[in-house]
Length: 239
Image (cartoon, rainbow, N blue to C red; front, side):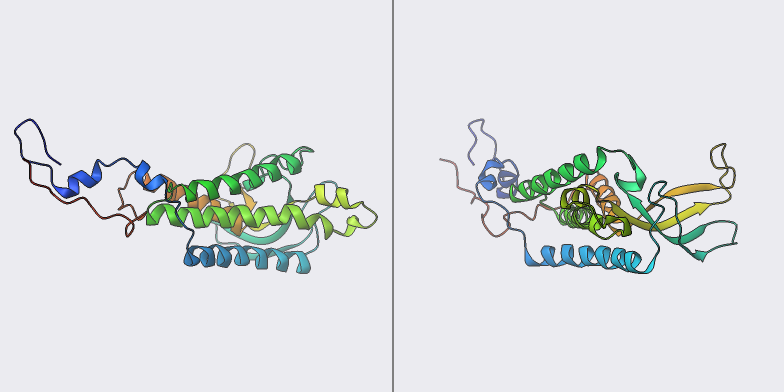
């Protein structure tokens, strides 16, 4: 790149940095096989653990959703209690909006929209670093895992017999089974110790993705989009 101010021409590396990003926008970023396999592995981990709970744990009470089956894992250490339980969550991560009549409809629609948006953003090169690609893997796996629950779990509760197909579909929920409490943290609402909302593998994936997005905002990484598609311009002498 020649300059008309009498200064030396810009170096090729600097020229590449100031190129318009629209040059890459016309070349959609392909979702690689490795990323798909990573999403599949996390999705299967989520689903296998949930279905194990469904087939081996008694469902919570139909009306109150109170836990009826609990397996202690860590107890009596004064720091943390960890149990495996089965709880049905019609809301979102960590039980928010659980039990609301509108929750199954709204959150299923939100998850479908999220998957479409994540796909389009990836194709347009938004997830252009390794850190962002890892975040994309975790969030897609998490959304897919919980969306599968909403579509299928309503058909596998004991009280589903006699219900219509639509009632079973709209009665879907997310299976939460990881239950933590901290007896040393006491409040007015938790006099026996703070209870962290129950969650699952998919929820964990979404939280990890959120953390990776935050980290990526503070650390610069090399753009991996179009690395082999475009070569940097050569340094042409000024005339």
